[in-house]
Length: 174
Image 1 (tube, rainbow, N blue to C red):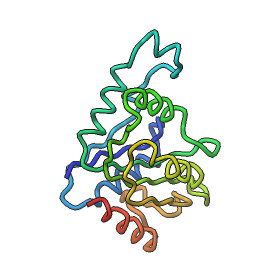
Image 2: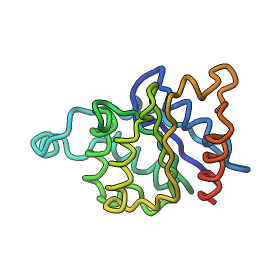
Image 3: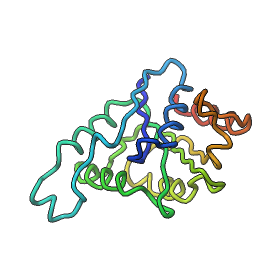
Image 4: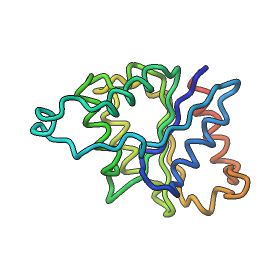
């Protein structure tokens, strides 16, 4: 099974990237590709830019990566209760190639933040809109208070209940 995992964040120190990577490592016998959305940076989307530029190569490449995967894990960072600008822009460009951005792939949606909210607002938004973009969301999970529940050295969840929830969520991908 080929699993594509990434954080919907362009931070080089993204805790969501750590969470996505950790979750992907829990998929049995998976070939994991950890994507960095910084590799897909494009101008801010607008219809005017689309008319000028067409569909940027980075959006085509991102769409192809999603299509080549057997399953997708995304961990969403939350900026002011919503998607990061970097992810939203990548998503907007890619959706112009095909509204079925996620190509009916089995997906695990995650989110985390340093605070007790665990980026639950952006996760709710992602879950709510997923069906419009051909996402087969099998499970979703918010991890609150990341630094209290994740061992940075071991790169693993430390809270047994959260770890069990994540294991059950990951199992739904297969």
